[in-house]
Length: 393
Image 1 (tube, rainbow, N blue to C red):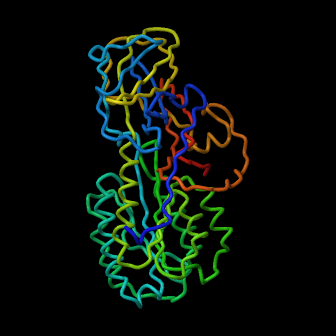
Image 2 (cartoon, rainbow, N blue to C red):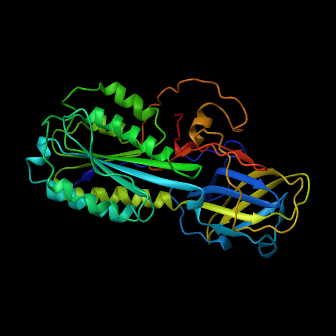
Image 3 (cartoon, rainbow, N blue to C red):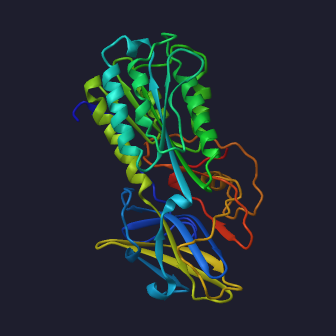
């Protein structure tokens, strides 16, 4: 632990529009997506953090109260339930490993493979994981891809132990650009509307190949939809560059013996933020008109709430809360809509390139990308989540 430094975490909770982010004491529920449809289904997908920006995981259906227009909705009558969020969202993490000559010709390979295996074992129960390697070559090397099968990504990590460097240089900038692109294209094939991605970069040095300018790499990171973490080891590390690469978290370790702890810290962080998401579904007692549903989250010491408006026209009986309505995301990521000032996906977007923001601190979260899905009789309201840092494709 003493050898680990450069790890700065921060999460800014912003209370914007009342329908977008809940503002209450202690807990900060943030609306990601919501939908409603006949017969009387209402579903809300949201994240819960505390005042310090730390994720609040493992809440139960009994930890939430639902109000419509300020009146408590009976938990029994509404069949209120927490639905497995995997039916609405998927999480992918890509681990990018530096296997340039400075790594493969040292005694680090075994430790890197071991730390990578432990990282995957920690994250894979909650996310799909892929591993790619790079050296000075123009293209990445696939170690283990994202897969829909039940096979574990760690089974392919033996390739790291036997990796043969083709180009001894280090194409760090180009590797990151390609890794972001692979993450994007993999998530596009997901069959659920909400898609979250994370890139974890390990390197022992700086870019030596010069195939891709540093600014081009930084532009790709700034324009991406995903969380990016970085781990640096050794004396050739450029802290300023890796801090910008690992905008959600950067850990520098003085020697390879501390690698396992660095990978563990980032793996634990990713898992905690995966488990902060909830899909709350219920059957509304309303049968006509427009209403405001308030979701109140409460623990023994803290509470917070968020709001969502819906139209109950045509609502009736025979609702099954375990079958929430699908989300219509209109093909834009949460952060994309935020940066373009769109809270309603039916409104046209103003095409504009977002300017990179200066990062005085790094945040630790996962980001969401969303996929268009049009369904009959589904009405969805989408709001922006500042901390999730989604960006336009």
